[in-house]
Image (cartoon, rainbow, N blue to C red; front, side, top):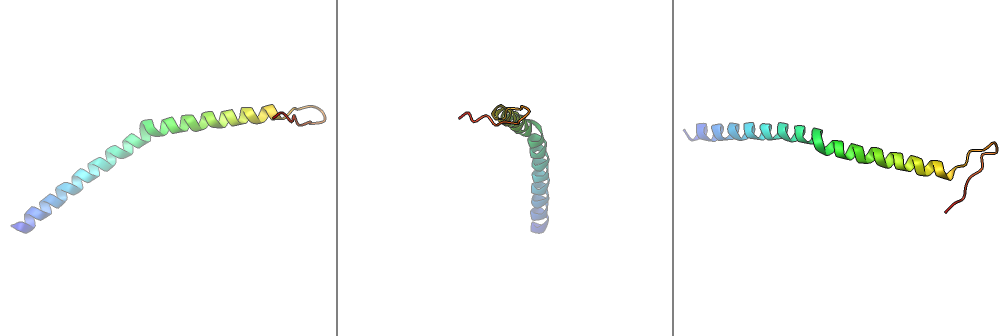
Length: 67
C-alpha cells in the first residue's frame, strides 16, 4: 500500500511540474522577450544613427572628427 501512495504522489508532483513548465514557457515567450527585443532594436537604431553622424559623405569621403 505504501508503494501505491508514494507512486501516486510522485506522479501528481510530475504532473504539477509539467503544468508549471508549460505556463512558464508561455510567459517567457510573451511579454518578457518582447520588451527585450524592443530595447535591443532601439539600441541598434540608436547606434546606427550615432555611427552615421560621425561619417560625412562627400566625394572625397571625409571623416568628421567631432568628439
